[in-house]
Length: 529
Image (cartoon, rainbow, N blue to C red; front, side, top):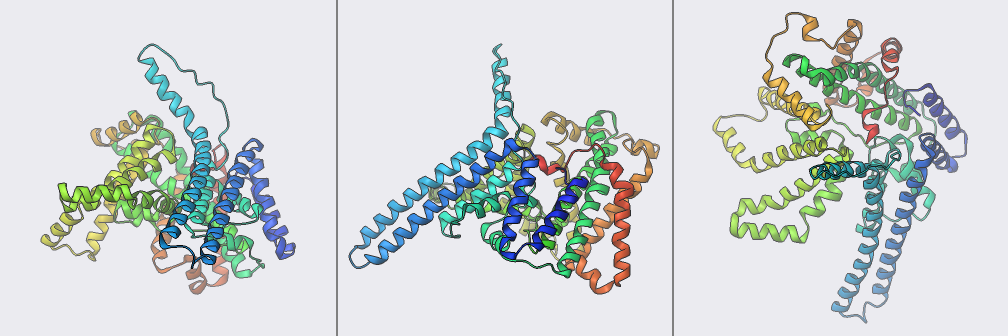
């Protein structure tokens, strides 16, 4: 079911009616039924894999929790009888058993994820290698990737790790964990929520509240406006540039890259606004995924503010476990003695960042373009980490103040251009195409003589005016968000009738520009992950 369809609007209308009409103790059952219904409409053949992930995580978490509780009770009951060494040995044995169960469940679910997302990529590489020797590897595998498999796998494995580490209690009801896994507002594009953050809200009773309904509906309209007016019109421009960059000027190609940066932000954050707005109507607060990312002063800061829930997941479950692992810490101590204190201090974090960013690239897509994309992001972050000391000395020598607005503007502009160039690398087509687009921008210096030469990808200029208005409005909203919620600001400062006029105007733009621009387009960009 497309989020941009009338059927989806009817779906969420039906959800809200049933949700607030049933007794509150049954509300989570309504969410489960509608979530499974939403998922089934996306493809019944995908449903068994969702159930496998949820039920395997439920059973494993219960086993881990029960073993941990039994061990704790036994040690408390026999505290006086056991020596310190016996207690330590029993704890080590219990931890090993629980870790084995955790590992098996992770291997099962990551294995399913890898089979669906990466088998074709691996077969293509094997085919290329076999071709060097005149051979061929047949790729006869045909299947549909389960909807949202990357997101629900990561979210459920995060829950499992939290139970293993004692940060969360294992859920005893398998249907409640199934709801956490399948909750439809976040299953296709996130956010990737933590069990402790989301579960209490899913199972708590909620009443229909005017403020929540009003603010949620406003955010829904804002999200549809960003997606249908900004992202979908820009999508046509970007597709044209990516397909024809070889025949466009470097400046026109560069403008196409800027269009893609605006498109992907409007697309992804628009989806989050739609789903966060819907959840706010239901009384549920989803984890935010964006915090004005294009105002970041470094690539590392950008990734703390873009797709934040994914960054937190990789930090908690990939980066930190590697960075603080015993073998990595021993390697750091060895490097301190033989290669210098600074090298030894940075080495564990560097290795963890390399693994994290290569994994992030593979998570986004099974292609060399995405692997390179992850590698380039990681390279900038690692380089910045290693250069912290020299940077501080240079800024002191040049008397650069961090609070100076001109310096902050330079940092923001530099970071925006860096992430824009990195973004387009895997999106043009192959990695060779992405590098070719870069080359076109930097080596083709002819100046356009007319607006049609500057913007050869623009036909009718009325949608262009709508895009310029929408991008300008998103920029203004991002500026105002420094002081908090814009909806709350409008509520305090703008009369009620004028607020209604603002959202009616946005709704008119959606109908006039967004609906025609959305005809024949695919769904949201991140829905493919």
